[in-house]
Image (cartoon, helix red, strand yellow):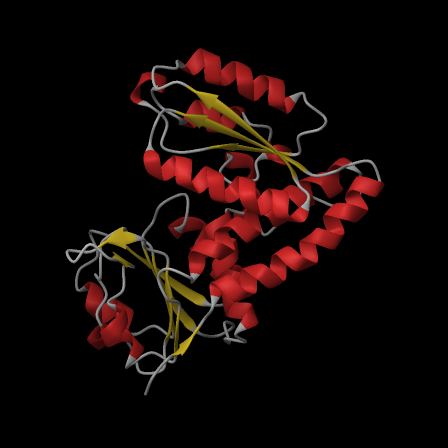
Length: 288
């Protein structure tokens, strides 16, 4: 068996094509979608991610603004920028690029200061609460992208057993809630889970988001399982790799996302979708 590849790059291009027309229609209605990114410090990976977001936004006509702050910025300065963006009617989505410099301290108060209706990262407690209650919400972009990959590939979810490896607020927890909302039976695994391989082997759908290169091996998988690899690591050979050992997993799985080219492009596509949703809501045309 050789697993079929779930091509996030191709699907993300389709999503952006659909959003391009929506952005134009919203602009004609007086609400051109606007995204503001606060980039603090000199983290190289963050700078790369922000450039990708800027480029993707520009390609579909979304107004993009990046606020670049120094490595020694304090929390009060970041807070002032968040407050100004909350009040700016031209900005529908606010994203605070993580990680923030150590000089800022705990980032949670700043993330929670973003207005929930502009929280296009889906990190605000209000949006997490809405998701948990099954209400309309701005959902974290990576889990939303994973769900769109599953839907595009017509992977059955209802009644299936899904295992999510990782319990972060950014991926693991919202991913589990989305799968539960789609009527899967969901198990969340983490660093304290005994016999992780046995848990994964029971799954029809496996989502791995722990940041450990090639953690999940092919012999951990149920034959035919669908594998969503959220990881992005640099392996011992210097090459990019996921949290799943792709070579061995591809021989067992029914479908699998590659790294790179799987989940990553969908994260940015879903970010832009959230910006458009926020703009629609500003026009009174949509729920959060």
